[in-house]
Length: 131
Image: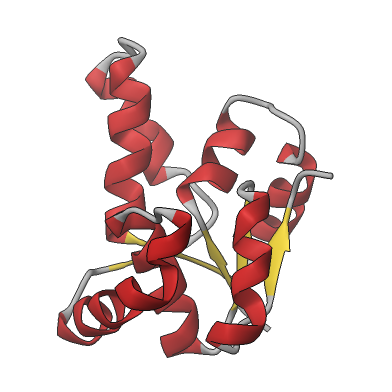
């Protein structure tokens, strides 16, 4: 089984927030994927907190997930998800995560509890790392 990590889950791991242990355990399996859009989102959030660029490059290089380029298939799937997710206000990055999971038949891992209501309509397994 593979897992697609949302930026919120990776940020929880980096910042040692609740749920970080679960993300760490999943990354240790070597079965995690990360959309390049979500990688950019992670860097942007940390850059907003004035983290040095060199440190951010190291963080991205050491995330225990394979970074998947945002290609035409993922872009198309991401766009098609907009009408199905608009009511939750999901961002492009959020939809890129969900699209990657759909394309790889993987479980989504997020810190965003509202995503759980998307599991059935999108035909996905979604795990929230927070209670």
